[in-house]
Image (cartoon, rainbow, N blue to C red; front, side):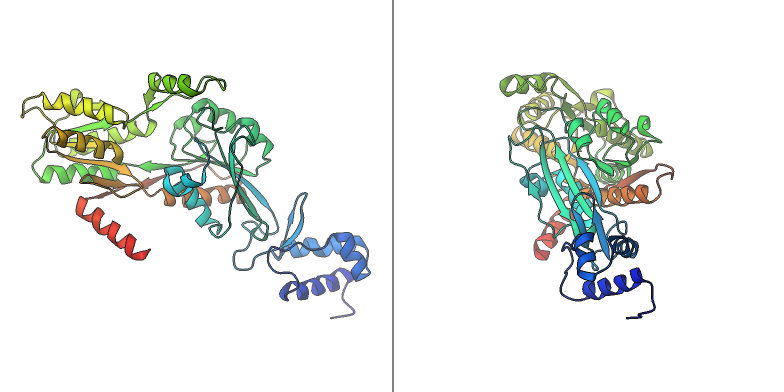
Length: 412
């Protein structure tokens, strides 16, 4: 060590040697400034200056209220020296099974991949611990805490409580398919860097980045595929969703009855219907208003619609269905088959088809990765213009879906 160097530089060099060794592995907590000052026999101001410079070099991360941690050299902090808290807001309750088996889980996995958190085990709060559900990925060595918040289990507001978001003291927010406009307006009033995943609305332009599903490529290819088979009576089946619960006291049978009787068009369904119309128009195929349907994915609704088609003459029945999602396509195709009707069907989904329907693939993980990149870019450049990113869909014929499914199993 250069004995002529300033005292804080000598302290820095000493700490660098410790960090390169095995005494303090990535993620471990360093002694406090006072403890370091005593052990090195210097004053606390010298230690504080040395630590600030090590923070700037990205070797350590200072976490408010928790201390100083050794940074991970293999997965360095997103912002050198700074510990970030990011809130990921779900429109449903956050549960372990949903992380691997749901659309919101796919979006979350994309964020985790983008930020090197896939090897961090989350902690989950138990039902009843709070008025909302939560999972936390805490990585001090990477300067990051990701906290997924969801609605409370007994109620159905389709978003986590705004008070929980405020209490999280987040540096940035990412919403995962939250579509309640009034809630989003309140959220944006917090004036935090915000990315809206799987949401596209001009009312949020200029205040948040948006990453949405662009349905045109996939739906166009599906219509083209059906047309090549000589099918021209191609119907569109849109989706509906239940309205959020009007009160936190509404639960049980009353909540179920309310959701069933208070429905609205799913926002993405409108964009997919537009893509269907564009594709039909490009091929000069007719679209009649009675070819546009909207229903939930329940078996009862599918059976009723299929029964109405079974009562029509052969020349009036649909030959193919382009659905809001793959679950609709599969349910309607099966309901028609039960009545002796054969038709092609395709719908959008993150998963592969289970039956004869065709998938219009949506890469939820890719949406999550893009959302994570935009959130980081907003933190690095707070004043850059907001952007809207559309992630294309991809049509898979049934045989392609089977091949992709087999390949996925072989990779596992």
